[in-house]
Image (cartoon, rainbow, N blue to C red; front, side):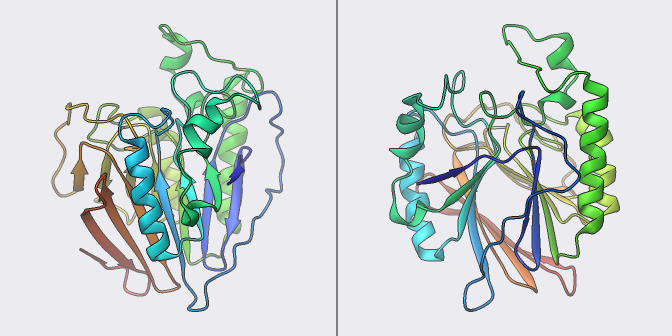
Length: 302
């Protein structure tokens, strides 16, 4: 099992799809103008396929092991190239160090299917990275029982300003066919956390300016798909990796809310130069929702 932990913004260029992993580091994070690139070979038919799952690491509990089994089955069927984790990967308090056995109990020993022995591109919260956390003002002013390590992040305003500039620059240079930004926190959500205003105000304008196709996140322990009335940008949540079923679904404009499932599951994504297909699965491997987007016609079909 390979584990990959990106710093700040990692640009993965797959010839026609580019995925920006928006991550936030601790004291080892450095600001840089050039982001490292990770090239992934295409299949013979010119396609890529991968899974997205978030909010999982509970030592196999809360159906994490059952979901891992289904991921293995779907991963084998699709011959996936990699896995993306959308954050909150080691509950409750992250990892204590590189030799913490929680890594084996919640990751290596759980996602053991042959098809999952791929690189995992992670949005790691707690020990490895502070995801989109620095955008959320409440974490600074009202941390409650939580303790945050802000080394490498303060002064916050400068840090966020540099981060947004870096993302803006990276997106502006992209000539990829598809653009996806992966974060942890929700921007639009009908789930428990709802709209995170700071991200909506600061991040969305950059995503829309550069014609980003999808923002994919975890944080809310559910599966959902929310569109935009004024742009093509869609907000996809895959945070049902273990503990879910919170039961507090918010009302949402039905024109935007395409799908919501208050439970456990994951998403598969298969794309080529012309089309990307998303499939949402539950803990039993049942298909809950399916849609595709054509780049040529910019038409979404279910």
